[in-house]
Image (cartoon, rainbow, N blue to C red; front, side):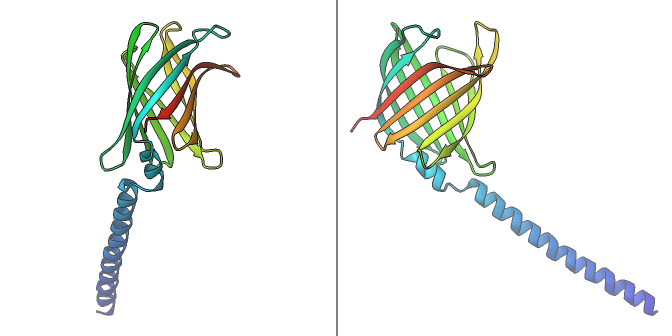
Length: 192
């Protein structure tokens, strides 16, 4: 009889302890989801880029070649209650209209910045991941972009520097072995 009572007592303890553990796990899971979905400091930093910008492009088609120079505009706005920054670009590049859309985000879970790019000069989506250095106010992104001439994806690097709240410079590089070959530079000035 004592053994039966002890067993029932232990079973009840395990059941109560299991419910408490489940409740704690559930509370932790809920907190994790809330932390993941809530915009914070990094999203607010990206949101400061919302507005109208004038852009000046330099595009290099080969190392050492003279760049193609173009001017354009960018309109940036936040999406989904400040979680993402979308930028729409337009320019006339060497007589050809160029339109592009960038989408930037900070992934709270993975603690990284993510940037995507699409345009009317391609059919692919470039996806980059990177970090932000608060001391130099610089983003450094890496990823891959499809190179039609090579017939494959190639490694790329993007550096975006905040000169001040109204001026930014973006540089894009193609990576070949240990060499970084500059392919593009864009100066952005906020239109007041």
